[in-house]
Image 1 (cartoon, rainbow, N blue to C red):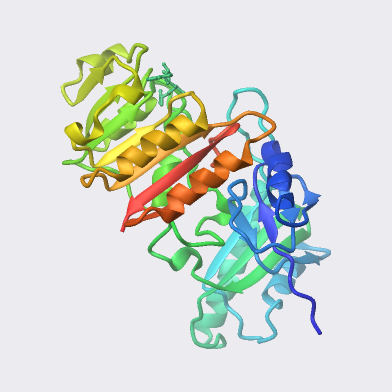
Image 2: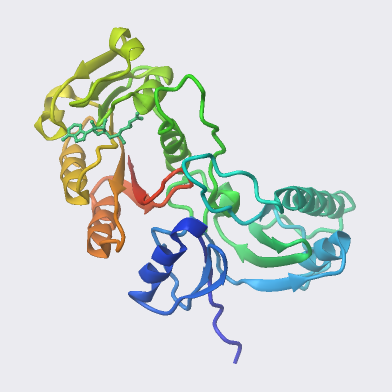
Length: 343
Ligand SMILES: C[S@@+](CC[C@H](N)C(=O)[O-])C[C@H]1O[C@@H](n2cnc3c(N)ncnc32)[C@H](O)[C@@H]1O
């Protein structure tokens, strides 16, 4: 009997301990490389952004041999996967600076190009079989060493990025938004990443309530997308945003805001307080008919309160009329992002 494959979960090296603890609540977990944790569980852990469902270690003497070996993972000589995701591991964070590129990032890019060219070549020569929904996921963990998985799944083709798992983004890294120098804060990267996971973002005609808005990174993103923004914070909003006719600053406690009265289409929350409070606000937003999407960060401390995370996942996935997910995003430090979309 062939043993059941043990999925390989990929998260940030900075929160690898939390991913291990999350998996160990229900099963086993073994770290195989920084940020890569293997388990017999088939799950959608909050602290994993990507999974290789049936991982195989592939080693070769040259880049060309590695590419050939990866395309030979499926027995058919005509194998030409429709989607090819190749990624290098994530670097650990150093201070508050942006994570730089991993030394293997260039090799990963060049391997992806080689694999895509080979797959296209097979198709052009009519060697490839009929198109399939295969995704070849490759984590390059050494110059000629890969952890790879070939899977027939929704992958990147799924129109609904929110529910696609193992994940529509190479390595689970949705967007590479650098810190914009003139942005009121660096928090805007979290919101861009959240839009990518949701597969949608606000547009003209939307009304967004931004709770815990100061100094205004998220408010700026929402207003630049065309939404009218109600920015709520006890602290001061960026002066330019205070003068902006598209933005209204409410200087008050986020819990005192009557969401139903504001009729928002988007509710976002980045307040630093206990996760239970964020979930209270999210539950209120779910009950407002005009709301079509919610993004909320839950601020955590070590050791992580997994019961609170269970509550968050329950709310995100169990609210009638919404699809939802809770994920530790690349731009999240020790916090996670709740993502919900109506429909
Ligand atoms: C992480 S910052 C938000 C950053 C913001 N999203 C941005 O992009 O610039 C958290 C904010 O929550 C605000 N805050 C904390 N407790 C609050 C409360 N009870 N009601 C409203 N705002 C609160 C703080 O004043 C702070 O500005």
